[in-house]
Image (cartoon, rainbow, N blue to C red):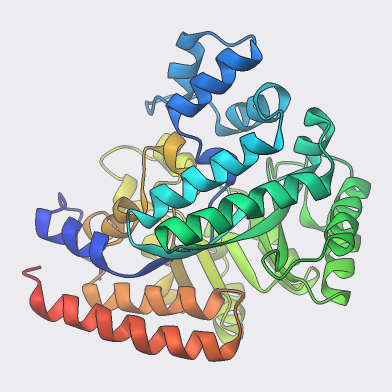
Amino acid sequence: MNAAPTAPTPELTAFAHAIPKMELHCHLLGTVRKNTFIELTQRSKAPLTLEEIEAFYTRGEKPVGVLRVLRALDQWLLQTPADLERITYEYLQDAAAHNVRYAEFFWNPTGTVQCSGMSYATAQQAILAGAAAAQKDCGIRGRLVPSIDREAPPEAAVQMVQWMLENRHDDVPGIGIDYRENERPPELFLDAYALARKNGLKTTAHASEFGLPWNNLQTAVELLKVDRIDHGYTVIDNPELAGRCADLGIVFTVVPSNSYYLRTLAPERWALDHPIRQMPAMGIRVHPNTDDPTLHHIDPTGAWTKMVSDFGFSIADLKGFMLNGIDAAWIDDSEKRALRQQWSTEFDALSSSSNI
């Protein structure tokens, strides 16, 4: 039984900050600093007031939907390659400040290309330039995961994969899918996933988020044949499916600050009833992430701290979650082995010397 929720101690926060980390579930457009958002708004003369922007960055009982913010960025603010390079660099700089050393982050090309007038090739090059600069300056390696906009037609998803194949790059290792899952089940995008797999791209999918049934998760695993799952919380409602996912060793990139459960569960029950609490006990391999950090008011240190303070996992559990992330990353096996050894040694040293 996991411990009851507690307030995080300074020692726990310091430990969560110090451990080596990776991010596997973070949306580039959900990382934009508020000051950067305001600067881009003023430059583009977008029809957004400062009050609206404040609401975008306010975390309350009824926060403005994240998707509205992401759409606004594509529609009005991200106009040049330099904009994409800037927000990429700033995201990775911020993540590196929390000892994130490796990140695979999402970006939705369909919206950017349609709204900005940039080609896919130009946009990808700009994002990778921002990542290269961040690696040089901050020591963090960032890799891009183009993500299907599931609100767009399935043909646009196939087109996105074709763009990737025409502009193949080692630091663009696979695809994802996100945006509103309601009424847009994963089977609509079977062709795009089949094309990606046929050409050696890795795959992941947002599935069974927003309290949606486990069926979408099952489809993602069995038909799309994804390598990992983003969210997937309602797996707990189907123990048989959970067992199959456990047997396959699929890693679920979970989000401790997930806004759906913050909105729908009573404040006094939120941390007790969140599915993340139950998933590891069912054999599900999880790895905590920030999702949309500036909009969720979360950072990597906070996400890892919540796994202990809110959900009651142990320090030993955190080490397991760290290793899950390494196993789920789209890097070669030799690099995984090296990271497992190096990061385990660092984690153990920090654990033995801390007062948590």
